[in-house]
Image (cartoon, rainbow, N blue to C red):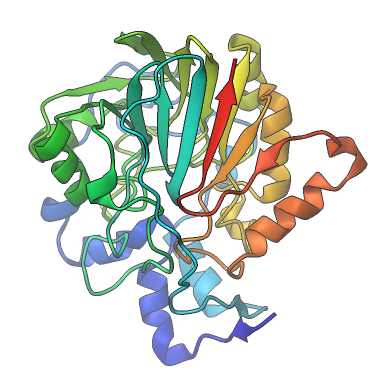
Length: 361
């Protein structure tokens, strides 16, 4: 496999384009323009009256900005190779609605999946921009096209927004969706004030294990091990989460962005009949740095088992180069894990951008 050794003269841009989609850049250009408002609420097992935190075993290993510097300047192995642009996407045009007896999931890119079930169109963490960064000239850049062109998206009824990192919370695209479809946004606690400030009115926020009905389904925010922030000054001011979507066809689990922790077994105990899980497999190397907040393909399969999913689809890979694994490495590592005897019979798909998968009654 080709490798790319990053010259020192380019490493400054690599630093500011690192974990969290360019948090350092947003700090340099001013917290007022990028930072989310602080949140005031009751103390809980994951909120200390000022900031949110991970309460799970091993969460104290969460990395900070000094670790970002160490990762970028003290690499012991080359960075995995990614071509500048990978022209292998066949964009698809989804049906307008999927009515009864089926869950149809179309992998658009990164953590963006179009879920069509019970006559509703739901999109997870919609990202269509060229860069996942607070500025247009630096930060993680797209290596693959979206699997569905924005103009070909069917009318979106509900957006599931897991947290506020730039590679999950694409404000420009959210505004385009609002102007076109006026969907409701479900998100994690303390993100509503930021979204309201950006002009979004139809926003509901939830703490972990809280949720609400939406038309003929129910959505619950579930725990994840991650962090939040859009600048250097607002780290963990807002919560992060995954989502469970209860439908007539069964449950859909969107794990969003997370490290591995014991909570997945609890999620599986609370929610049975998970017909489909969307589980991240990318941005996991080096594991000493990424492990607390991103799962590897090996851990992704553990999550599949922990929650008791019948089928899983991989997300968070293949479009943006955000860590040290090379292009295609996450998919290859997932395949190796699935070939182990303990994973015999596990159905865990790594779709290409634009591919769809259906689960039927």
